Image (tube, rainbow, N blue to C red; front, side, top):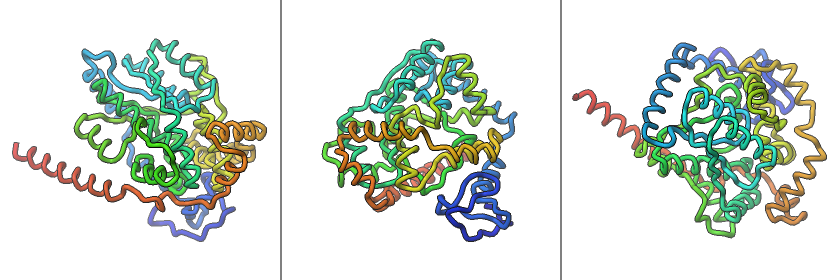
Amino acid sequence: MTEATSPLPTSSTRVCTRTVMDGSDPDIVFDEEGVSNHWHEYQALMATQPSAEEKQARLDALLADVRADGEGKPYDCVIGLSGGVDSSYVTWLAKQWNLRPLIVHFDNGWNNELAVRNIENICKKLGFELHTFVMDWEEFRDLQRAYFKASVVDLEVPTDHMISGALYRLAAKHKLKYMLSGLNFATESVMPPSWNYAKFDLENIRNIHKKFGTKPLKKLPALGVWQKAWYQLVRGIHSEAVLDLIDYNKAEAKALLIRELDWVDYGGKHYESLFTRFYQGYILPRKFGVDKRKAHLSNLILSGQATREEALRELQQPTYDEAMQERDKAYVRKKLGFTESEFEAVLSLPNQRHEVYGTDQAHRERYFRIVGTLGKAMRAVGLKR
């Protein structure tokens, strides 16, 4: 928030006058005009972004580096393809840019059939070979069960963490330095800290599993601070958010995917995963009082891709079909191995903050000290030269 604004008390029903964020974010603050910190923070973020010309220059340089690094190799970059809009559009762009990506789909056992068809169809039409990284289901299920028992807000940490671990592992295996990501400011810059948790905190993951899990985790592609540091600093692997280097419009991207690749809409952000659909559409609103659509829609408002009135109308609708919610609930419960009474019991547990199970904060601080020291040493060497 800018210095010109002064925070006022919040309430659970007060809604930002520029976005649709409200007091369900416990850290939200409003200025005298009812504008929330999310609007001010987005404006500050956009003020730091490069111009269209600078973005194009950066994109051109990046693509040149990717092609150069891929010379003599079967692939020149890695793309994780979920079948959602963002990753599918990145895959389409890679074809337009004449890249040769290693397309990786992460199978954690929760993809719906529509997602699988979308992924296969995209690769077939674009002429890309699909590589599927299949998780060890018994280990992964045990980790997910542990997260339910821990009663923490971010039940997607196991998936998001292991996806990144798998992508870094495959990039290193194929000696590739570039991973093209679908992350972007236009649709993902607004997210209250209390609504999710750090995806790379391996200490937190291990502690939760140690307390609530039953099986040793030997096959999952874990990625902690030091593993990630090795991949980035030693192997030189970079994750590049290419959608931030173009004028990315989600609705236009979706229309293009439908027109060019026969892509089929899932009806919600990240709903290509049945687990994510149930988590975001059922568990978060009912257990944690969180409707992530407010953040997703606010992103679109801020980037000029939706009006506030459109967003407010959408929020009047259920997160998704209520009959489907009940079917998903039964399916998720059975797939995770809970009885009805066990599942209701874990969903009714008091909510806990991730931090109560310990964090990797000390490791991260040490990592940043080391990186800072290395940076100073490299600059000193450069000056001497």
